[in-house]
Length: 143
Image 1 (cartoon, one colour):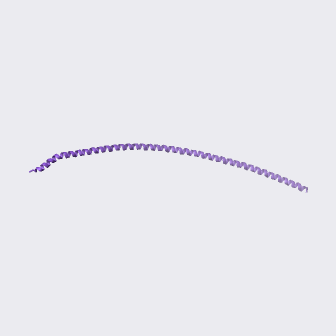
Image 2 (cartoon, one colour):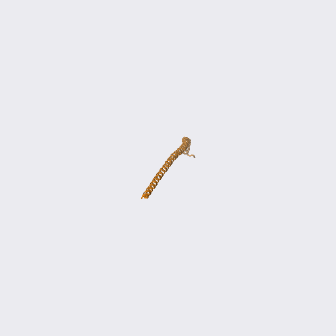
Image 3 (cartoon, one colour):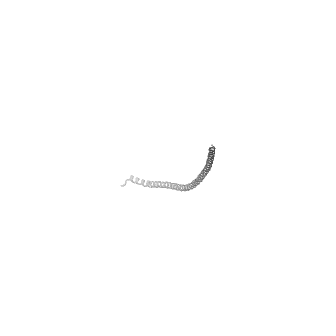
């Protein structure tokens, strides 16, 4: 009542099934091994990238420090240049003020000399006028 062909197919299946299961398990083990290799490679890459990020962070910190140092030097340079320019312009102003004071003094001296000359000329004119009046009186007296 059992079909001999069915028995044979079942026997064949029983012989083939362990081989298929073994192939399937080996295939899955190979896939797992491959995935573990890929995971290990990804972990290595992540580790390298983390190291690179740490290096970049240190480099950035160094650059920030360097920028702060440069900013400090620039401020000091600008401040010293500002002081130097202030001293230069202060000296220029003092020089101009001294020249102005000398010019004013010279002008006062010239003005004083001119006033003296004018006073001398006025005195001479007055003396000449007085002489002329005296001469005129003397001439008028004889006449």
